[in-house]
Image (tube, rainbow, N blue to C red; front, top):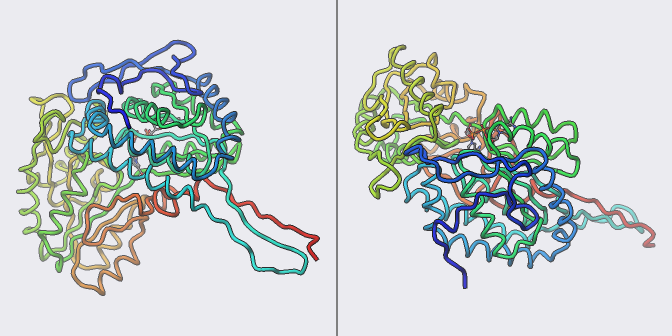
Length: 490
Ligand code: NAD
């Protein structure tokens, strides 16, 4: 039987190191607040390098035993963890809403999404095959086997407090690695709840360790992992700026890296698109988590023949979206995560308006709801000079750009250093083939706005990073290949 916890029982405020809940070595704490109200939810451990080091000590000690645990036994632990997450989906969903702000239906959806990676990698744990290499010389046998890389450091952002860390921990544990983790300072509580359930599922002491830190202390804590040669891999989801810093700083110990970084996704609507489907797809892709997702369309290119019609249809649907606190069952968009986030959104909209964009709907803060709310917005006549065309807005803003022909759309879509998601709508099969080949992105949505799946490889190209999460490819990031050559067999 799996146990269902009350929300209050899921809230932990200490680090989890070597199977124990422990305060930060210096005893410091920082506030985690509800973005809807600014109220303090909990005061969690403010860890620094000493705590990061203690977590690595535990993970390094636990590694040989976990590596040698039979894959089917690792899989069984992960399946138990999956069952516990699903059993506690309501409580975890409420916790996500509380610290991150997304509506409860989305929070619960995130729990099930994150859980799907745990189930997927539980199964994958038993399918880590190597190769027998066809014989090249008499008396010699050659083969390749896959082994866990060792201790993995996982660092995650605030926008999906459960899914982002679950899809790192699950493949790492499945592969036989041990983990030290640090969730974002805005949303550490969900990650701690997840770790609590992992412990209950039977993940042994030291195999999974998690510390929280304020933004200030995260720097020395992570720097300790960067410099420690026992940490063999860093898996990071977050901004491109921090991703580049980690790549530079981990060079000293040549760690394996997976970087899931920022996006600036184009969404192209061709004249021959099914416009109803395109509007529905855009709403699904754009407004999940209020636009605070790395695959959120940031630039929408609409062909001239359908521009005004599409803009009207979209503005009508966007104006009807319900903005409300996560606790309102009708909420479709909640508060943004914090003050800097909402300031950036307002800056982008003001800049666009000052350069000639037309506000079709929205375009303002909603102070009557709270300090972090922004109205879902559609801007027509967007141009490449506007800040929002080259910088991820991370909010509920849809800028509509004009284009005349296919070549112009491709050029504009690829005119970015990012390359995570891209989307386009067309009913012409030959165009679908041409555009799919030319888009520079790790992910392409073709007449589809909802792309995420545990069975699919998620990741980017260009400055959106490298490595893939999910799918049969997702384990490779946590494995290294060992070549075996046995002689003397004549
Ligand atoms: P961020 O890079 O500011 O922070 C991410 C994590 O890194 C946090 O845990 C933070 O504490 C830590 N961090 C920040 N500075 C650090 C430093 N100097 N040293 C060590 N650790 C440090 O990103 P964010 O604002 O939390 O998240 C939003 C970004 O994440 C967006 O750019 C978004 O596109 C990206 N993102 C990408 C994906 C993806 O899969 N590609 C998914 C979600 C979010």
